[in-house]
Length: 532
Image (cartoon, rainbow, N blue to C red; front, side):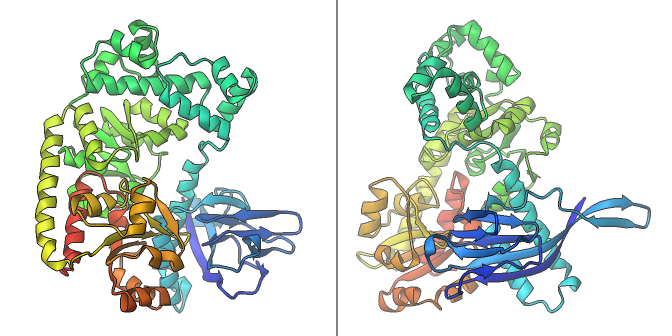
């Protein structure tokens, strides 16, 4: 059992801070920059990029921090804490001892989860209001939640994400040509390597052997065909790159731990664990048995629609999932990047992988409806959504001036503003369901290109709209509005350009699949009609 004690939290550097900044503790210390920085000591240095953090367990000689590439500092946050492990338990006594062995290594740079940003800001705000840290248990609970969040993220991040460009190209080719003959020699030649080096590099970069990865892609395609069609196994084999139905059947059982015919019978199951797609499953009237803590934290609008769902804090809790006896696990295709997790889940129940971020919101529900034997439910939901959208357009029409525009913008941990394409953050709701018009630059640079855009705060006015929906990492949106309005950029937008700012909670709008779309549509209509 672990516990943490908060020692200090502070703004380590900001605009105008003179560099270098000496790092004098107390330690352990976590440093979280909003722009790239470099940390240097007598015998080492490392770079911490946007959206990352570094853990420092102990001091070093000439330990200091400088902005990356010689630029000025942007805000850099720092947390100092003690870490304890339960060493002895007696009837009336618990003995904890200082322990850092369970923490990641000294100087390790990790990704800072975007949903941890709200926890960090809450912790800092509470700390500033506290006279005596040791007498405030809430601070230590907030610290524990934050550290648990970011270090659990690390346990997932140590799994594979491809960095080598040649292997990235090979992976893309495999996904696009899985039904074609794919040999190690062919792929090695295509990427310019000899066979032996290609195999070792592929394994190092992906966590899979080449043969394993190809079979996994093919088996997952076969799963979708088994659920979504009535094709015979022989026909599915030919369409997925297997020699014949017999070989597909043997390989299927090896990977899925279930025969192909038994898997097909699970088409109509309700016993589903969801590792994504919560809103889409709810749109199909499926109540998922369980999901991850991360997903629930980012789906606040769905909470009342998930009264009995089991939350798993990490993928170390496989036994919790096993006890639920699911018949199917629905997961995004990015789990290919985490082979150990995918294989462990497959030991519990067959994993049905769905493309993530590639389909529009209605296609996603339609695909799941087809695969899970709920085509009618999917059609009913899509009709209901379109009806709700038509009613919403009628409601907001009296409140909109001629030639008005609308845009959606999300503030990231790196202090850049994301202007999303239709696939995320309710841009689909704004432009497709409500039928609102984007400013010219958003139309040209985002909607027409099909790509998201990130801009600096000072450049937001170039993409300003009459109605600006701002997704911010805070639950108290009015307090966040007050902070924004202290900055000249937002003062000019509101008072000179006449823009209306509508603030949205990140944890309400991070995911926008299925039922989430309906709930987010209602929130946006109320803001446009001044009802909230």
